[in-house]
Image 1 (spheres, rainbow, N blue to C red):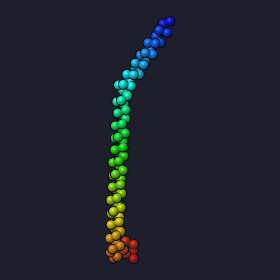
Image 2 (image 1 turned 180 degrees about the vertical axis):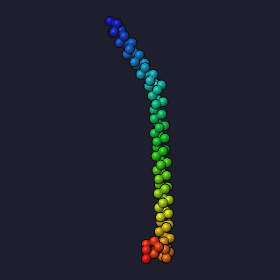
Image 3 (image 1 turned 120 degrees about the vertical axis):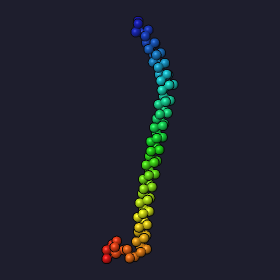
Image 4 (image 1 turned 60 degrees about the vertical axis):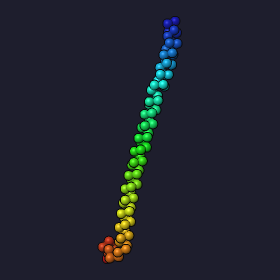
Length: 82
């Protein structure tokens, strides 16, 4: 009969432990997960902005070079040959 008497005690302790876990540890872990997701999203935004800015700068340089060469026909033989 000793094992039967310890059954309700163990169930009570497990229930109390589970309630304590939910009350004390779960909100912190969820808050940490939210902070991690926000940091990841911020990092992705920074990387995307850097890539877009770099591509824009390169495209602008290429377009300016092309427009300069088209506006000045004397540079075309140097660029494309005679």
